[in-house]
Each structure stands twice: as C-alpha cells, then as structure tokens.
Length: 296
Image (cartoon, rainbow, N blue to C red; front, side, top):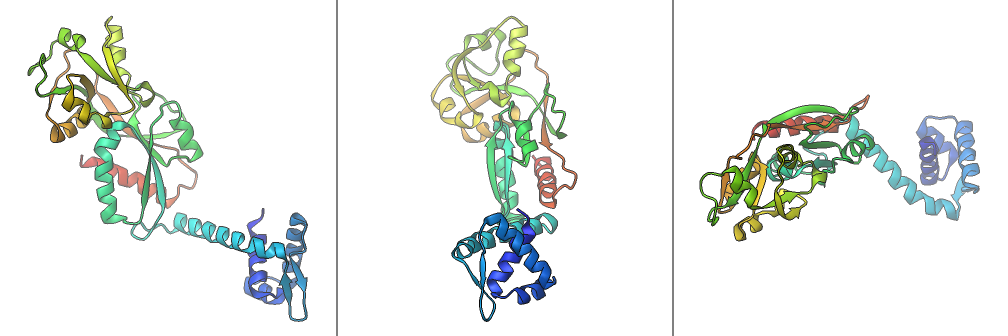
C-alpha cells in the first residue's frame, strides 16, 4: 500500500477536516480527496462521513488509525536511523552471526565496547550455519557474520580478514596419560570432543583423513563454549583455535599442547552483503567489529 495514502488518512483522522489536512500536508484539497478515495476503494469502506463541521471517522477508521499511526512512526524512525545514525543515542538492534570462536573471544570485548560507546544498542547473536550464512546475509536476517571461511567461497558477499588462527590441543592439567608434550600416537589413542561440522570446524578431521587416520569421538557439541565443565571433570581432549584455548587457560585447570601433525593456519574474517546505498548504521557496525577485533 502507498505510504502517502496512510499519511493522508492519519492527517484527516487527526484533524477531522479535509481542508485542514490539505493545508498541513501542503497539498490541494482535490488532491487529498482524490487520494482518500483511492484508499476508500482499496479498503472498500468510506472511512469518513461528512458532517456539518468536517468529517467523522467510521468504525473501521477507528480500528485502523492506531495500527497505521504506529506503523508510520516505526518507518519514520527506521528511515531517520538509516540516514542520521548516532550510536550514542540509537536503540537499534543488530543481528550478528558468530562462530564459537567469535562467541568466546570477540563477543565479551564487543559488548564491553558497546556499553561505553553505544549503550542503547542491542545485539542478537545467531550461531553460524555454514550452509545458511550467505542466504542469511543476502536476505538481511543477519547484518554481519564472523567465522572461518577457509576453503569456502561466497560469491555474493564482501569479506575482510580479521586475524590469523591455528589449532591446538587442550586437556585437563591432571590428565592421566598426557604430559607436557603430545605424540601422534597419543593423540589418536585419546577420546576426543568434536564440534558439529555445520559450524565449519572440519579441518582437523579432513587432515587426519588425508593421512589415513581418524579420531575417536566420544562427545560432539554445537560449539566450544560448553566445554569448561567437561574439561575440568574428564580426560577428553579437544582440538580448537588457539584464541579460544587461551580463554580456557584463564578459567580452568587445563593444558594447551601443540598438535603432533602439520595443520595449516586459517583466517577468521568478517562477511557482509554490500548494498547499493549502505545504511550508516551497518557501516558503523562493520567498522566497530574491525576496531574491536584489532585489539584482541
């Protein structure tokens, strides 16, 4: 429906007079009447009845007015936000797609930054699904996504590398069989925690498969963030990015070990779908993510 018709309806409803509405809208009275008739035809209702002093709203108009008024206000706020975004005062909601390493390493620092520089902004986090992330970004379900896209190609997305990462092994400090070093046989003999492949962590098993080996998986979890209690209470081993491992070193009784086989480093990057007229708010979000991550 044409938004100009809604604005005309609201003005006539609030002023109960077509001439007054035309004056406020800076339109001619015939133009207001013509467009009001268009809306009447579309809704199959007279909307207003003429009276001695102006017009009186019909029952349907009384029902439509609060809905139309709220909708127009939301649209105007959204347009104003897009054109005149101010992070200090904005209460906009951003949706960010994060891998588990992003949840562990980036999110706390990002929220700390926002509390100081954009206190009213809300962040909603969506767990990355590799097979969905491009669609999510194109359709606007999420604003940006941060994850390891090594060996993946997204033709329609913009990308910028944020940092280089590598995998390490993590075990309980008092592990009964693993000391300060890790052999290849010991790695294969242990029971492992694996991360669901849908989040993109497939490199470890891919490399082992090329070598003719595979891990013994005792536990599969959706992301690394649930491992603290598991590592504290079991002798399971987890292979994870070094930045995520560092977070566990600060919180748990664990030991980080270098992997006993060669694995390539990988890049964690920022992905987004570029629009012809990029909203100021999303441009600010992209730059903020870059700024926050640069200090990690």
